[in-house]
Length: 172
Image (cartoon, rainbow, N blue to C red; front, side):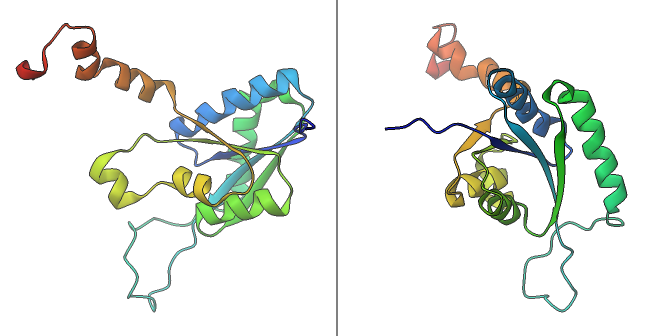
């Protein structure tokens, strides 16, 4: 069986600090492989007032202009991906998980790197997860990244205390 060589990597961002964790992994891969990195941001389309049957999303102020988005993508590339050569900056419009999957397939990406925001429980059920939907729908391999702040939170929770026998289950 031949090993597939990565040539094109898609990294997604929603401009949140948590999404930047994926960038570190792109840099690490780029150190070992000569890959082209694509940085993708998806603008969610505003729903028209006619489609009142669908659930309402939170109201947004003005849509961000394409020029501002490209500036932000360039700033991210300069700050986090400066060692990676030319980074292709991409903007898509639509449902984020759908556009990520479509772009990766259409452009024959070898890997998608996407960060998780760490929502669990009811918040995850209500808001859903772009990352989860990308993983379920993508034919392209997906590397999901849990940001350090979320990993640290998990490591500090009470179940760790229990595992280390610092606290019993009954005392919680």
